[in-house]
Image (cartoon, rainbow, N blue to C red; front, side):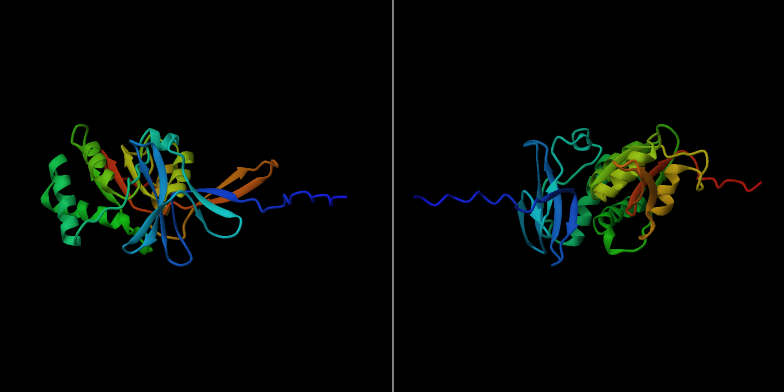
Length: 250
């Protein structure tokens, strides 16, 4: 008489997949999301220093796996968020800065001083998480003065640019910034009030220093109110037609 075969053990731990744009692993390795628009493929670049490789996913702790955002993601398809296509050698830092200035000079007309400032801000955007406070880069001018052109050219060089207009509502903005942790490119950002009553200005006011997230109360599946914090810290390029005006206390 044969011994019955025991049933297979189906108690394997489930792995939770977390869509991720970037991460720093406990050992100091960097994980960055890259996107190839021709192949319509997203994957991770993982490594530290000059040592790196492509990976389709990254296991962090038991039961947790970082996965790239889908190449069919609406934000990527419509180029609201731009991602690098892969790592590339750039030579020395002065050479890289010179190439950035050359690109800006070719496609947008600004003063030499502002051209240099813009090139340095591009570099800053790729290292912004090394700082606790950040400046913003703003251009001001009337219709037809080239503000949008400037944002498109310089913004495309910044770290994971997120393109939005002043007509955008705050709900998607702070969620996108929190998810991708990139550079907010905000066009026509003239608001009626430039204090705490202007919702988008709250993102600007909270986003220049670490530790000041935007707080929102959401309803979970159990119909309970669930307070959540969204990180909005990061570099920002802003275009306006006028000056920001503080609300009168009268």
